[in-house]
Length: 185
Image (cartoon, rainbow, N blue to C red; front, side):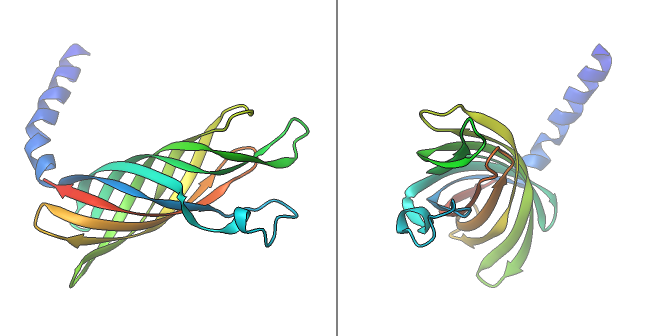
């Protein structure tokens, strides 16, 4: 068993230069909107409007799997109005809280004259926390589109729109719109 672990470490170190030439990381900032409103909140602007005060902060690292396909690990925090369930099982608006997440995504990119665009999707773990209610953790799905506008060979500006479906008690859904910096190796 120790010999197999040693060989695995040697192979990983041997592949490191190839991974370094086709990897990138970046930071994204933006806003969010909660999609599933509560009964009786239709038309109430506080429950439906997209705003950058509902902040999104994300960081990612990705490696190239094929020429136009990347595997991306993304961590982030969404600060937004939280919908949860009370002790009776009814959905309630719990006020502003945080949703921390880590996602494993596949990003398929299309070459464009200005850089690239992409479609991505994957699964993740989400933790919702808001004061006065119990924290919840469960899996979720994330999918969206992005655009990469290169400034140079190593640096670029990324814009991204994502849909997050979270498998918590109230089944919250969020749309996030972010922009940020990408650094390639």
